[in-house]
Structure formats: C-alpha cells, structure tokens
Image (cartoon, rainbow, N blue to C red; front, side, top):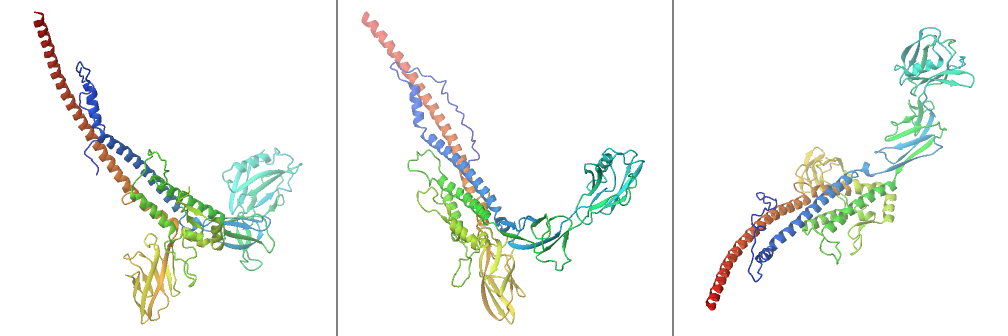
Length: 574
C-alpha cells in the first residue's frame, strides 16, 4: 500500500552528531567510536530497506521497458493482421517490354491477356512548308495576334512587329494561358528552322487546332503539317471488348483503372496474340513477413525468461536484478499458449471427413518451439523452412489465413451461409448452431446454447453471446432439427496483438498492475527508510546524551580522585 502521507525525501538528521565531542577517560576510552558502532549495529533494518528499494526501482525500470516492448510488438502485429497486409504478390509480363505492370495492395492472383492496338499520343504540328533560316529571323511584320485552340479552348496571344522565331516560341512558353496546354519549340534540320506546336497531354480530346496564325510571315493553310495526331490508347483485356473494331480506350499510356489494383504502362503496340500479364503470390516476401513475426515474438519470449532469471547461469554472481513474481510466468504461459494452440476459429483437419483447416496451427507449417534445455534458443520459435515452403507452395492463402485472418466466417453446412459479422463485436472462435424448423418456419435457434434472434430464415447472435452480431441465413426449411458449426477466424497476428493490448491495458493489464504494485512497494520502502532514519537519529541522540552524562560523571570522580591523591600526598609529607 502506498504511503501517500509520508515524504519520500531524504530524512534530515536533528542529532548533534558532528558537533558532539567526548574527551574520554585518560585510559583512552573513545565514546564517539562506541556510539557509531552502536548505531551501525542498529542499522541492519535500514540497510535492508535500502537494498529492497534499489531492487524495487530496478524492477520498475524492467517492467517499464517490458511494457514498452509489448506495446511495440502489438503495433508490429497490427500492421500484418489482415489478409491484404500479409499477402504479397509479384507481377510478370511476357513479350519484349510492350507493356509493363505494377500492382498495389488488394491485387489478387490472376492472369490476363492484353492486346495493344495503338498508343496514346499528343497532337504535334510542325511548319514544314515555311522557310526560316535562323532562330533570330523576324517572322512578325506588324502588331497583331495569333490564336490556337487546345482541347476545344481557344487561346489568343498578342504579338508585336519584329518578333523573331525564338522570341515567338519563348513568348508562348511563358504565357500562362498556354501553360499545361501547348508548348512551342524550334526544330533545325541543319539548314532551316521549323516551328513546332505540341499539345501537353495525350488523348484524342486534347487536339491542337491552328485557328489563326496569319500574323506569321509566309503562313498559309498548308504551312503546318499535323505530324502526330492526338489519339487514345486502345487495348483489349482477355478479348474484351469483342469485335475487331471495338477497343478499351484511355487518353494516357499509363492505365490504372482497367484491372483492379494494377497499373499498366503501354510502351508499344502488340501483335494480335498480345502479351500476358500474370499476378502470383510472392512467397519469398511472405516468408520475410513470417520471419519478422517469429523474430519479434522470440525477442519477447527471450526477454520474459531473461527478466525472471530463467536463463541465468549457475555461476551468476547474484548482482543482476530479476523479477521474481508469478505474474510474468503467467504472461509467458499465455503467449506460449497463443503460439502453440490452434488459431481462433480454426479446426484441426480431419482426413476422414475432409473437414477442418489444413493449417490450423503454426506447427502445421513448420514453426515449432525449441524445447531443448540449455539451448541458446530454448523456448523460442524455430522455422523448418522445408515445411514452410511446402505449405506456401500448396496453399499460400491458407498459410496467410493462419496469420492474418480477421473475422472471416464460414459454416460446415451447405444449408446455411454466413451473411455478416461485426468487427469488434463478433469474437473469433467456433460455434455450435442448432435450430428447429416446424411447418416450414424456424421456431427455435441457439448458438453455443444461447438463444438467437429469428427473422424469417435468418438467425442473429445477440449480445448475450460471444458471437454477437453473427448473422446467418438458412436455405433449407424442411421440418426437423439441425446443427452445424460456424467458425469466425482470427489469425495469430491478430490474436497476439489483442493479447499484447490486454497485457498492457493501463487499468487491467498484468504488466501495468504488476508495475503499480512495485510503485506502491517503492513508496512504502521510502516511507520505511524515512521512519528508520528518524529512529536511528533519535537512538544516536539518546546515546550521545547518555555517554555525555557518563563522561561528565566520570570526569567528576576523576577530579575527586585527583583531589584525594593530593590530600593524601600532603599528609604523608607532614
């Protein structure tokens, strides 16, 4: 219990020690040393309190670090506790680089055939039939204006007499009305210069129209040639759309809205057979994620054993502080249980019935615990890479489910399907559902013995059940009593993340509660030290007073002795 009313500051002595002196007897008796020895002999409780306080403070620091470690682990696990976070994919393309592809989160394993009929282009006009011998040749004879159109929008710019070819180009490129619409430049063939107007963007809608260039000397309708026509990219995906003249069209050669979560970069047209794009599971990346999981969990397992002294050597000198509390043993056991048991909502596979999950536990994919006493990895997870790679090759999605399932629900009955669950309400686990149909109507239904709400042919688990929010639909209303098993899955990442959150909860978590008990112990010990220092100070003062009085008395009798000796000596001499 915390001693809130006692100051935790250092006790300030009120004794006269330091200013108190005793001359002692002539035979060499030293009262000061005797007092110090007496106080030191009485200080065994104070020393014990101080040692206990030092240990309690060290334990508090260990618990603070352990709590932070568990919080960090929870955050890491929450970053890979859903399927789209855990699964990894790679993309490949055939051909000679006509198409490049990249994928984003949410992509799924699949393959596609792409035929590219044409690439998207921007509009380009070049003055092939105008003679401009140098870039500084004047091509505007009088003040006037020119008008160009881009994507249906006309843009007019005033020009002045004497403007050279280069100045016209520079004026267009610096005019904000042309910005992001039309770019001008000069092209030289070694003898002459040619004015080039380019649309900024590709796509059929972004055409450049030379509306009025009559202000340019020597211009006529045939002066400029449309050397590249604005057009859309055209493609087919898996033969869609059918028909030789029908195409998927996009204004850009970068296409991110034709195939979900995939961006295509069109570099060249293909032949009629097209090229293939394949999205497959990236098992190497998934192994790296699993290695991160194992490494982070192993660090926690090691630290839990380390701080409790389970890994201490026989020749340990005893100077290291360990947390000797059963709470951390229970924490360790809870983590180990989560790692070695079947995943929540996972059922061990039954080869006879064909029901259950092929990978219901970590051991099923080659992740087991090192149980060899004295091993450097004792108590930690080990990966059998052969088994893990075999599991990933056989069913990578099932492996991912074991780690990252997050509310996926299913039933083992063909007459019932799961409509929905509610995240945060529907607890992961397996549930026994029983229902009775009479007269073509569901008359009763329970889930793990708790009544469900019935509405027509649907069943809803209520707040009285751990399955709260689980919504089921029955398809066969033939009279009879039926039963089925419904599983709501949570992978090991989510399960451990939830456990970490529970262990570190500031109100109910095992680690904060244990830390609070040591904080209380620290406060109590500080109070005990304060009180013991006060007691010893009082004890010292009493000793000083006692030996001061004794010294005074002895000095008195010493004086009497001297006087008597003097008197006797005088009597003898007479």
